[in-house]
Amino acid sequence: MDRVTRFSISIEADLLRRFLQVAHKAGWKNRSEAVRNLIRDFLVREEWRGNDEIVGTICIVYDHHQRELTDRLTRLQHHEHDSVLATTHIHLDHDNCLEMIAVRGRATRVQKIADRLVGLRGVKHGRLIATTTGRKLR
Image (cartoon, rainbow, N blue to C red; front, side):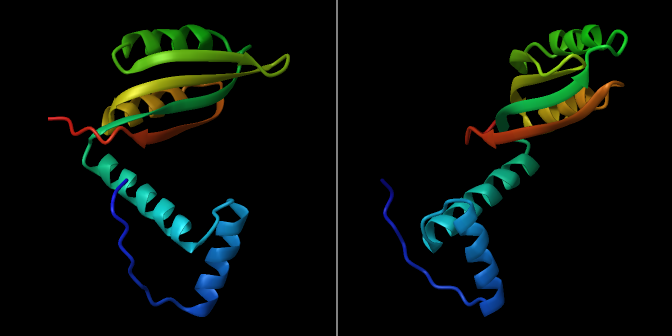
């Protein structure tokens, strides 16, 4: 385990109170854990800007009655086979399906794939949920 370094910060009382309420709801045990989680999240977002490798899931909900949508989803995923790792398909009800598409690659490319999938006609909602491998790509 890395050596722990202590530091202090100055913060307005109301901002700290609100932060601790949210941190408690999130299940974070103490201030240190909450701040560590925020710093990690900030660093991951910074890696996205650097276009490093990310891994994640593109989750989409769509109307499976939409004409040719499943074919377009499959075709797009096959076209991006080097970034699309796997797909899980779930029937939510008579009209709606959920797909979870595991992805890996440069941040800008993975985001572009997510944007194309979410933008298809018949997709009701979608989002890329990603994190980092910490791996720097050249």
